[in-house]
Structures are given as C-alpha cells and as structure tokens.
Amino acid sequence: MNKGILFIISGFAGSGKGTIVKELLKRYDNYALSVSATTRAPRPGEEHGRDYFFVSHEEFEKMIDSGGLLEYAEYVGNYYGTPCQYVDEKLSEGKDVILEIEQQGALQIKRKRPDALLMFVMPPSVQEVYNRLKKRGTETEEVILKRMRQGAKEAEVIDEYDFLIINDELDKCVADVHNTIMCARMATIRNRGLIDEVKVGFKEFLKDKD
Ligand code: 5GP
Image (cartoon, rainbow, N blue to C red):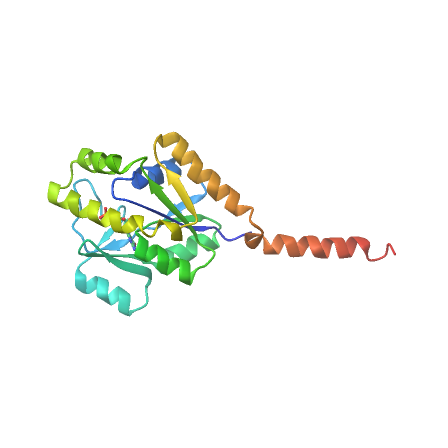
C-alpha cells in the first residue's frame, strides 16, 4: 500500500478553507485531519481536541523542546503547531492527511517533507476576503484589519505553493481540491513500488523467451 499524501491547505483568513476541509471529510473517506495545538483562546463553539488542542504558552514551549511538533509558527500573537505523531500514523495507514496551516508552517513542511503538496485557497477578490471576515462576525473590526494586513503579507508568498484554488462556489472548490489530490496519487514519485514491480514483472515474463 502506498503511503498517504501529506497536504497543506493555507489561505487568507476568511478564505473558506475550514469549510472546504469539513466538506472533504464529510464527502470522502480517504482523508484524516490533523488537529493543531494553539495558544489562542477558543472561539464560541470550538472544542478542545476537535478544533484545536488549546494549550498555554508554557505547554506549547514544552512541545517545541521535546521535538513533538512537525512545524510551528507564531501567527497574530499566538503559537500554532502540528503534532507529528498523528500525522505519521495516518500517512502510514494510507490516509491523505490534511494540515490546515498558515504559510510559515507550510514552508517549514516543504523543506522537511518535499513530497508534501501545498495548496493555497483564496476568494475571487480582496474585497471578498474582507466581506467574508465581516460576515463571520466573530472578530472586532480591529482584528479584521490585522488579518487583512496579514493577508497582504501572505499574498507575497503564494508562489511557493504548488496549487492555487479559487473558492468562489463551494462545491466546485471542494471537487477541485479532491481532484488535485487524486491526480497527485498518480504521480510517479508516489508509485515507486508499483513501478519497480512492473520492471521485475517484465523481466520475469521475458526471462525464458529469448
Ligand atoms: P485561526 O486562529 O483562525 O483558527 O487560525 C489562524 C491561522 O493559523 C490560520 O491561517 C490557520 O490555518 C493557521 N494554523 C492553524 N493550525 C496551525 C498549525 O498547526 N501550524 C501553523 N503553522 N498554522 C496553523
């Protein structure tokens, strides 16, 4: 069995990546979602262990020191990081593991795991980025502006990603992400075992034919 694909979804705050991930998990059975650790406070409706592992600064720093994080970053004043163990377990089981993380973390993973696939999701326009943050209604205008400024910085790094996904119409966007993963499964780099088998198979077949 091939290992699963480690793939990263990043996008501006309000890009809809959270909804896309929820839909992928609901519609298909090949995905596993990595739950991150963070030092930020839970938003209404968020649950410890489902949305994030909400931890203190001290606990987070302990995780860094013990090497338990695949990557981590500071984002808008808080730490966010991906615990390694779950990711590697699920990849070995053949699951495609989703990391919904921001760019500094995505670039760390790109260096550490060159076969990871990086996707950047964005709404069709900058105005739409703002509209969606506003509509979410969970942050103050000041925080929204902070996230828009962060977005401007993030736009500078989109070129580092493998794929750009426009989230205009949700169903199409979810299908685009899923189809991209399905294509990646067919890449020769992820099918070395099968290719070796075919080579041996031909040798076997032809060995007493000359
Ligand atoms: P939020 O506070 O809106 O849930 O997340 C803020 C940002 O942190 C988002 O861009 C989200 O993708 C990112 N993020 C969530 N978990 C992680 C993580 O484990 N590592 C990194 N590097 N970023 C994360």
